[in-house]
Amino acid sequence: MGDSSRRAGAVSNSDIITMALLAVGFILAAGTVLNGPSLDDFWTVYLADPGASLSSIAANRWPLDIRPPLFDAWASVLGRLGISAIPLARLASNLPALVLLIMAVRRFAAKSSEPTNFHYIFLLLALTAPATVRAFSLYRGDFWQLAAFAIQILLGHHILNTPADYRRRRDGMLALIGLVATLAAILLDYGGALFGATIALATIIAAIARGLRRWVRLILFALLIALAAVISSLSWQAPFWSSSFDLYQNWIEMGQDSSSAVLIAMLFGTFLHNPVAAAGAYIGRKAWTRFDIGFVVLLGATLIASLIALSEIDAQKRLITESNSSDIALMIAALMATAGSKLVDRRPWMLALAGVAVFSSLASLAALGVDGRWQSGAKKISRTVTACPSTEVFAASGWRLDSGSGSHAAAREEPVFALGYTYMANAHGFAVRLIRPGSPLVAKPGQCPTLLWIERVPAHRSLVATKVLAAAGLRGLDQAKLSIERTSTGLVLRAEH
Image (cartoon, rainbow, N blue to C red; front, side, top):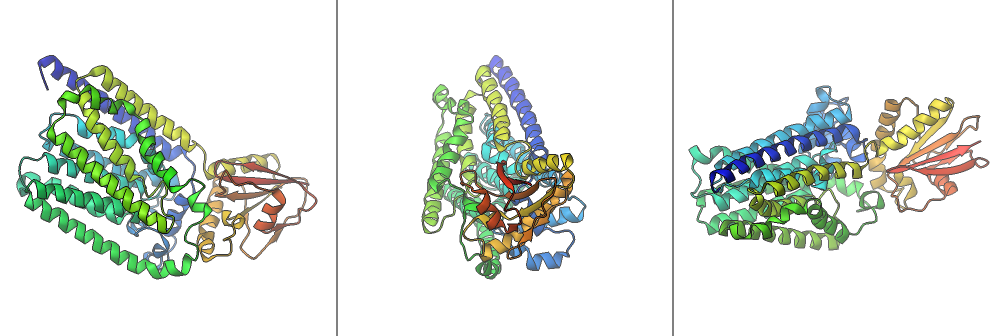
């Protein structure tokens, strides 16, 4: 690390990173509490229904998920422990993954022969990436998958860095952490499985090139087990999907952004949220080693291979979303951390890197819309009901405004929408009547307004109030004065009598 003054500076810089990580951890935790629930959260609650037996939900609900049921099983355990409030469930589900990730970073850093803060800089950049902030604020397996994939990256870093092949006494814990992470990264999400399998293959190739035969066998074994489990899970869920997905994708899931726009936003959005780290590529250019170059090549090849494979699949059927491509953000963070580690002896630059990281996480949290999602609509309705208690509130699935409203795919999500509306109405103190498909309801005009609440309506979609009423199946408002107020994720139609 250089002379004594530079070593002292490095220690101080480690403290800077530690304080930044503590601040980011607090911000992530705050996001789980402040952000309102969404359809993704309600899907987990529906799949883990604590009111039904485990055998019942395992047989009838878990197969409906578009992911392997690993996280559904974990959420089912939490539900049976009495953790039912979504903000608390987010914390209870994501904090263990965060703690395990931090422990893994500490373990890999302790075994590294390179005297840099790469591991902690990578952790800081990974946790402050917009994709990670979003994943942490959801009650889904997104953050678990990202944490597992991050550990896979650390394993690849270790394979390139280690001076000798696997030895149980020296590397047993690292192997356990890395191999469990490989299994989890592939088994938590089918989209993530592509990235997890690709980096596992790249790590195996790197181990072969370095002659680390024991590591090759261990990682290959974990990869084969994971792929076998994925194939088994797909075979189990496929019959349920074939009867549910008569529409492959829809505007509710995909939004208006193209696949290329999602990928570009993931690539450059992650970079632009903390370009300070990238400055180390030039400022510390003389400190680059063959190991650094090898790691960049490993990650770069993995990234390119993953993007090509994902694009080829997406060309056949629209696939790419922010959720299933979030691993790209971690690969970009790791590339930036390699450059950022060259700033370790430069206190002003490390202060800037840590400060931008904390600001970035705050900006990502604000962009999600604190107090937003379904909560923004529920609060608008609650204020109206409080001002005029006899207000009637109706709700319908966002599918009603789409041409696929009569599809099996729409029917699959009807109970989840119903659960969400009921959950939010109870939380905000008003009653809501659900309009079922094919069963129109009639509003009774009175002194108070009638409200129609519809969530999962894209912001770009143009709306006509009379057509919204007809599509939702709400009648009796022909003479009312109609207006539509958009919320962060939907709309509230107001009918004044």
